[in-house]
Image (tube, rainbow, N blue to C red; front, top):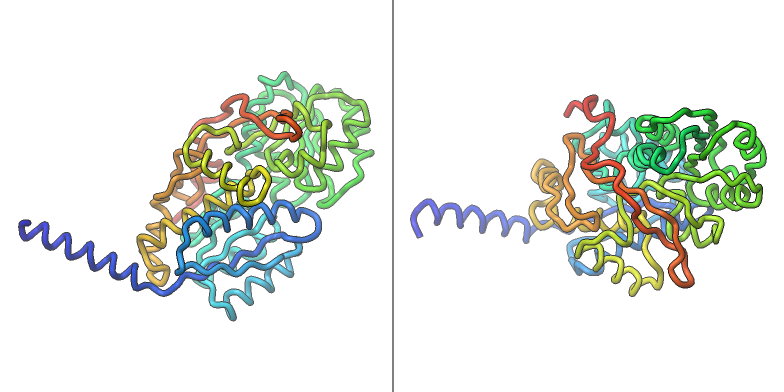
Length: 379
């Protein structure tokens, strides 16, 4: 070994020794585990913790709390985790209004935030931050996929609807960005609404030939059942959030045939995804959802960074996160300059597989998509 090789080997050994001697990393997971939308947070938690269990890393500690889908509770939990629990990284929030209440303050205090789901436009453009990484998407993405695919699905006059909160606003903006037809009705509902008789009457009278909805959790279950009972019969398209694994079981046959934009599906053909789907089903006795897939990828991203750098060295740890040196269930994974994924977007169809409903990919909507706010991020 020559002198240069010896020097490089010594530097590598010192770096590895530094990582090996690093203090344990503590993660604070704030997610929705009770009330409306609990299934989304439970899947997020379970996907994350499956990866943690599989890794068996004793230097990773996870503190989990229920935000009850309330912004004030989420803020209180974040303060407790930062001030009392001394967490290094925060993650887990499902809802964008909660993310907007927590993420800017957490990153301002020097904490890393890894988003397993909520990724509002405010945090993607001018509000981007070196300590904020979205592992899931940017909120508009799955709606963009639906909009891009709608014409192929025969929808030329669309009635579009979402709840009136940040993710709902991003949703309709995303759909319209790639939709080539005419929007004949645009409605914002109340967050948490369960009675859609008025909105269904508007759809019936609109002259639409298809309907796009973003109604997450129980909102979507209520709407799809009421819509099926109404007999309106126009085709439905939406994002994966509204037609996820647990949700479509509750919808029943009313969900069959619905198309939904997604960046992940249980039938994506790569080794990491096959192992994830099998491992999740074995651990929890059910198929995973997109929320579980994002939780799983987020944990594996975090573990990959821990293998390279100590979280106390913020610059090194940030660089290790940006490298995204892990096997994603989505296949190829890379971050854009604003630290959001660059990824393919698909359209899935709700189908029956034996006794359960699930989703299968029917086409690719957009390839290598980042997001619409990239140029506004100045980092």
